Image (tube, rainbow, N blue to C red; front, side, top):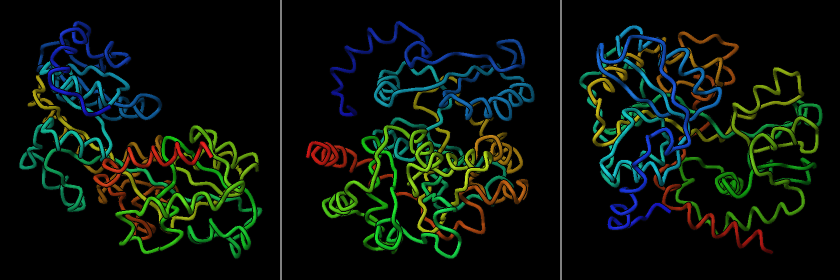
Length: 360
């Protein structure tokens, strides 16, 4: 899907880009409240939609438009293949794009991103950013975590599962488990069940990992999406789940008896990138230099359940909210960042093995 030939791209682009960015991506455009067009230039931001982008718009995009005098327009939702076509065609209609780490890796590999001018990012914004998150072509924003959630009635504190090995131990921890399947088979958790050393997780032996997945057999309930995984946990259909931390928070708010095991969790960072050839690169950097303040990054924590990558932002987050976020100083050392490069390269093999397993 990602490996388009340039000749095909040139042909395709002549037809695709008669439409605007927003129709191309099935996105809705919205102007952030702010100045009239042209007062200090424009900025087009493409994000992921939903409540996440609603929070971004409320706390980041609209305030920036007002403070900087820039006419900000938003688009929501995109497909990687179309994103790649857009940039390679030279018809770039977004200036800032919210992307995952593996997407950054893939786009950077093909030379499709502008470099971030880190010299223009204020020092007070950089001090709390971990060194391994200062990427040359991407600015780090938030991170989410894949965690283990479990039923606290079935497994009270003194009997709670502590590791992925426990998750796979159906003798001492009986009950159904749940995870999504096709879109993200839990190969990393299966590997950690065999060897819990986070530092040695990658590269994963996929043959062994899929054998481990098969070993759960009828004890695992696979779902099409995380909403269903959360529902399985909420209704008691499953007693444990492999699930993003943000999907557990609403259950806790509804007083569902669930707990989070942060041990051996994996974090998945997100970034703002500037696509190669962005028309408003200067305003894109102006936005990054504005949004980078720890206090601004912290504003998304409560409404989204995502943790800021900048550790200084936790000064502005209440302890009640922080304890449910990845990056929380109390639990950060219990996990590691997922290897975006390995995941990007392994996706076809993972998909092939999942299809083979599902057919059996």
